[in-house]
Image (cartoon, rainbow, N blue to C red; front, side, top):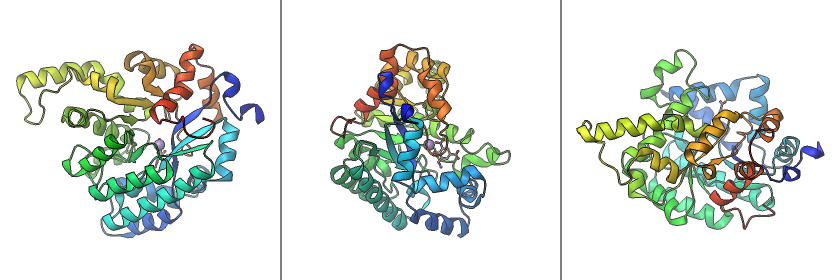
Length: 356
Ligand code: 1DF
Ligand code: MN
């Protein structure tokens, strides 16, 4: 395995930017929600499955999520991952009652933060928060950044059917902007209002529903003028930008037409000319779950070479063959280094952390 241990021999380090963990304590909190009154249907589909499934992949996922030590490092070594950028797995705090959500965010940040301090050359953390309480969330983000050197905020998409453009969540956006750290909007299952026709046929999860929900969330931040209000905000989205790069032409065309006609009260002119300007200037995407050269090149060409980063999505999707396939992409050495290493170093400001 030693020849896979690091990407360094290829002229780049491999920094995986959408990697998940979960405090063991979250298992009981999730079980309580599942057994409680009228649980969220997406949550039942996702965690009703992963908590109880005896399938081999589910068992691997459960065991890997709660490990922030030897087991995770061995899995990274075996796959040739130099550094993981780690976040509280979906839906994180966002399915919990506010008091429990606040407590889980703190616990998650303490566990992840200690692991990052113990392995500064291998782990970087994203700060969890409970956006249900905006002011408290801002404080917790600041604590995680100052105490543990966390380099981003994780938001697991919708918050009980609400989105970050809702003013009640502005304190989270203000904190990220003030601390100069990006927000990673990670997928969640679609909200109650969106999920029904996906759930009927098993399309609600990572196969498709995640991307619809999260792509829309990312897009709302642009069309509602939220990025205009927080113009320095940098957003990261996974899964090749949850399909948004492929939509850019139509988004630009129909947005212009809709605004000109005054079709929607809530769709006002924006400061930038086009939706795609925001995607190119305020968004960075990762290829989590998409080890697909053609899609990566399309995004590099249309978003910009500095806007596409490598991610694995450990432990949900982590075959070593995907790393090998990405190493073998037909791409200049300079561009490949940006993809695997230096874009992440810039976006997460990794220069102070370990050997890089
Ligand atoms: C799954 C996929 C679950 C991803 C995840 O978190 C997740 C899955 C609960 O396969 O059920 O982060 N993913 O990002 O692709
Ligand atoms: Mn993920």
